[in-house]
Image (cartoon, rainbow, N blue to C red):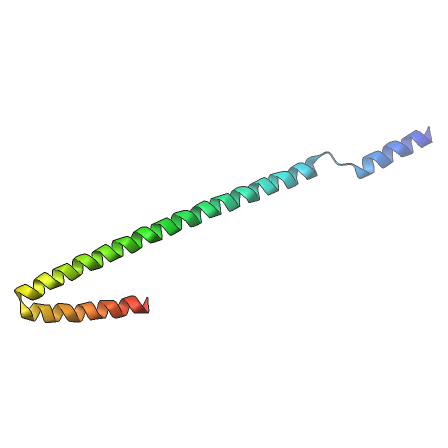
Length: 95
């Protein structure tokens, strides 16, 4: 009888209730989901940056048109506008 008890004890000593593999699997699933979410966030950030670049280019274009129109209407205003344009370009280079 003591032999049977020893065998049962040895079986239980090395076994787990199955929670360790499930915990690892759950952790891996959470990590995979986190990477998917991160990739989606990176894609959204890239799309937003592209849209902002388009918007900035459009604003620069509109401002240049305004400065051209203003310079044609008033030579003094055109000089002031061109100075502002140069400083804008310098700021853009610094950024």
